[in-house]
Image (cartoon, rainbow, N blue to C red; front, side, top):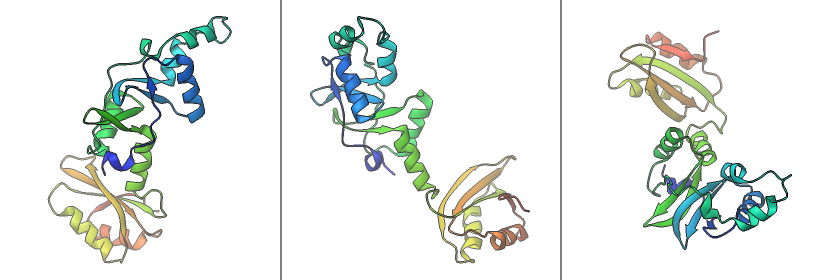
Length: 209
């Protein structure tokens, strides 16, 4: 899945000379946490609600409102922004969010800001990709790390006329082992588990009762 399929195109942005008061107003009205800072259509910085909180005086101080109304966004914005292209994958987006510990990624094409992706967008998309938003069951099978194992286990599932919502592979607990993780459109896995275990493979989840 590509970034352009999940990014928000209804952008809420702010100019470098707009005030911090205006930034607070946008964040509260639109219920967002990040504001791209632009000059025309070009991205020049990013501003978060945390940046605003850190920079703003206490509301108890008499100068608080004057400070917010008299301070331009450019004074506290972060000019170094990590961005994405619309044709990047959501896996790359997730990696960047995780590695840089940030909450959003502006999407830029040909120097123009065209969208924004947040951590919520990524989580929503992963839930859909994994089939966790639909009724079903979770199945984990440990197999040797050799070609053809996914097809073999999937074939056993197919024999029961069960659809696979999603599948992923991860390194196993043992050396030269893979863990196959399935989301299946069925609630009772007992017959499938019996076939898999009879073939000599270990089912890690669900645990046998």
